Length: 156
Image (cartoon, helix red, strand yellow):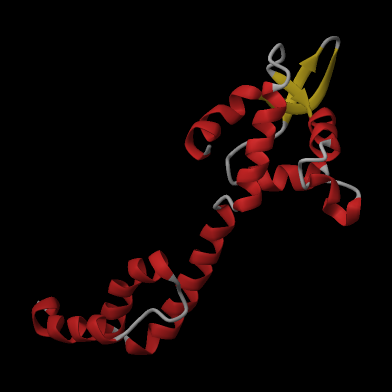
């Protein structure tokens, strides 16, 4: 078996090398594969590094950042300020976020305030998306309270 004959070389690589292009948990996860590749197919090590770096970057884009968590907190405060409503039009949510002086959102987008595209992008990593909602007698794009609840429980 290949593992029996090459196990010590893989272990030696693992003990004396790092996944330099990756950081923290990603490096820890990828190092065993780098170790096997370095012994089994060293000519492909650079290719594996490129793939690992791209996957790690893609994964980090999907992770909520500090502003995303802050936005979720402020969305909660906005929904809580209107306990009679389980839905907010995107325009109403943006207005409340941008005009609250305690929030940073009014200074976003060159001082014009956070817009619907940026709002949607920041909420995407939480799997929260705008949807068609009914408000009185018309349908608009907006957000439902229930779309945020799991996120609030997890992050706040």
